[in-house]
Image (cartoon, rainbow, N blue to C red; front, side, top):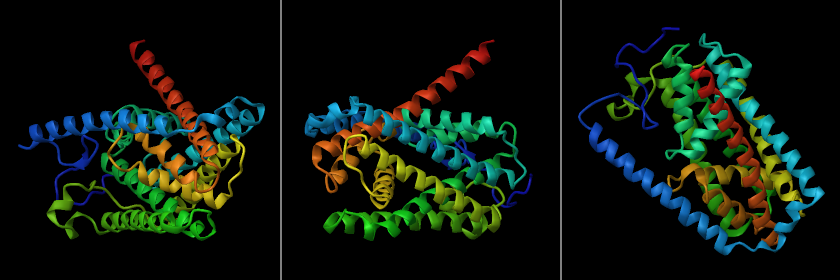
Amino acid sequence: MQDHHPSPPAVGLDAGGSLGRPGGSSAAPDRRRRYWSSGLQVLGVLVLGGAFVVQMDASDLHMLATPRAAGWLTVALLCFCVGQVLNGLAWRHLLHGQGGRVPFMDMIRHDLASVFWSTVLPGGVVGEVVKGVRLARDADAGAVAVSILSARLVGGATACLLALACLPFSGIDGAFRAIGALALALTALVGLGGLVALALGPAALPLSLRARLPVGRMPSARDLLLAFVLALVTHSAFALVYCAGFAATGPWIPFADGAVLSALTSVAQLLPVSVGGLGVRELTISGLGARLVPKPAADAAAVALALVFTVFVALGGLVELGRVHAARR
């Protein structure tokens, strides 16, 4: 488990949510930049959330109080559970391949905590940083960082490739389809390029990139292939979450539309303009969903899917409260 690239000094997850070298003379400017970025993201929640509320047609919101909605929201929650578990199994498998052992229930708790912190704190990847730091207490830090980052790159690329394959069969057309295809393709290339960069190792990269890569052994091709398979099933489950969320408000959307909406919403949330993607998610679902179903139904579906996600954020909060209580005892 101590199989590191020998050339650069140790690299890990820093408090700002990036992979880089600790310390240095730029610490104070970096801290000020993070404060400004965090403040702007908090402002983004207010502006984008307000924009969604202002433009929302609430005439179909009453549909969420029906038995039909309760049934479909339960389906959405179950599909989200499946996706979350499979997503965790991907990084857990990659870490196991490098000698790190994580019990199944610990994996669940780590992922729920990650969802919670990534939603309530600015930065987008704060939850992954928290998870990585905690895992590194019992495993090699380089192996943890490489496993988590590899799984994240594999998952992002797979979601976008699945959506690109489904896009010709989606009801999203015209300029929205063209822009969506470009965004998905670029994001997939970034994910695959990141995996190539990890495989090349720090010695083969420019100095500017070396400082942002974790030092650790790249997972084997066999382990990465299984991670891709798990990611494919993961994002198929997340696509069904969107299908069920729309069905809760009335109209059903096909799997292809669910896959495209799920991936494009995730891509939109990569923009560092909001805490936890709040406001960005709802506006994206509402805007693209209105290309598929009447706008009132799309707006209600955006609210329904926000409720589903909030359940998992709340579960993550409960996990963290349990951790605090156990530490005090």
